Length: 174
Image (cartoon, rainbow, N blue to C red; front, side, top):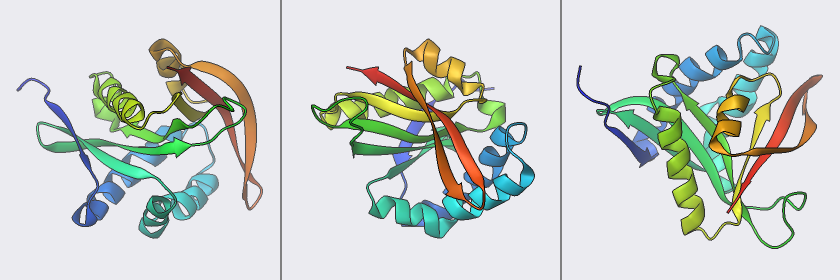
């Protein structure tokens, strides 16, 4: 097997089907033990349909696909100029809105590669730090803590149909 060669490419028009394929494989697998199948189905349509993903780019999100030796293995979405006055009133931060790698890619450095990329983009954008939301029951919380993020507060977000996103809001200041 050849050594890992990670790279990141911003999603272009031709990449939407590939991004959707990654989403369909990674997202339900990530949350199958945390959320009900009904909530997963609802959120896949509400937040992860191609039309919803495209709409997110209209409101500031930038999507990237992670490749390992030219094979897609994860994705990232960041919001470079994000405002959260609970974290800072001085300026903007970069929000890591989505960061997922295929289950078979976890533990290979892929997540760290994506996070390093997000940090570099945040610094280019002049952000004061990086923030993200993580489900309170998601094992990824330990990855973010290891990376240096601090849990600043928790919040519940009503996403409709009686469902909540129950998240920790984590922050890494520069």
